[in-house]
Image 1: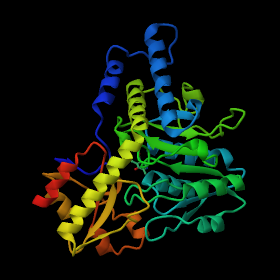
Image 2: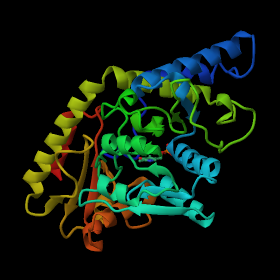
Image 3: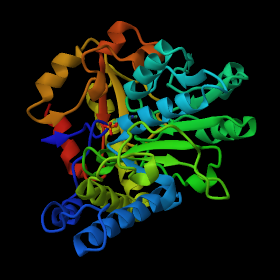
Length: 372
Ligand SMILES: *Cc1c(COP(=O)(O)O)cnc(C)c1O
């Protein structure tokens, strides 16, 4: 079985499983308890994981809050900023191709009296800084633009957008879930990013764990927002609830491995993608075209149209030997809002298959395409 749906989720690496196991069994302590070794060990494991994720992101460890994943982090940032800064303004800017966890949260906020501007994207799914400049208002309290898109692999001009927001003094959030471990990002070089979302299971860690990056200023003061989850005051009061120590340890290990092999993994992904593109072009030359920019994008994501083919039928037919998807896993029942936003017709959307690779794939495995 060839798994080519790594934008939906990735397989857990064996080293990650090994790191997690002790925290599911003998090291079961609650990191918020005190003095005895179970608690101290659990607390140490959590802080060690936080350090490893911080290294991968180029942040300070204390800028990271563990959450249940990017859906929660996106909710936490959007609702938390909206609530905290509503007396300053009620306008938020985002884009039409965001993940549903951003778009649905924005719709919820609209019902609560906030005004949202949804920026258009170009033919490859990228927002433009000129559009952002035009949309910015006196009462804009947040800009939320994803770093890379899960269906197209398109990359937004985050450097320019974050610098623009920094100059204007507007908070900027980016959903970076799809680029972690695939793009060399170092938050030290992005002072305009106030918040960032990422999720462990998109880079070979466990499901149900992610972080919220919340910037601290030069005095160590965190950007204030209203918490989404209230309770026992864990994570400095910003996210209550007993920490999922085993998952957090898994995320830390996945981050350590992703950091250590970043350049190697990016190289492997680029080579795999080239091989896959060559095979597809050789086998299906007359019927295929690419929806995404083949130069500037997340390595390993190909959005391909097969003219005349129904993608649902094709995905089903391939399912005994290959896992691919028609779009994103989260919106499989609806036609893709992302492909609609880049101007595809409903027929072109129905012709589209997304292939998303991972560095754990062996190049030889791609030869299966020749036997289709
Ligand atoms: C997967 C994904 C999410 C959701 O992350 P979870 O941790 O599964 O909740 C959000 N945004 C993007 C871009 C994603 O790819």
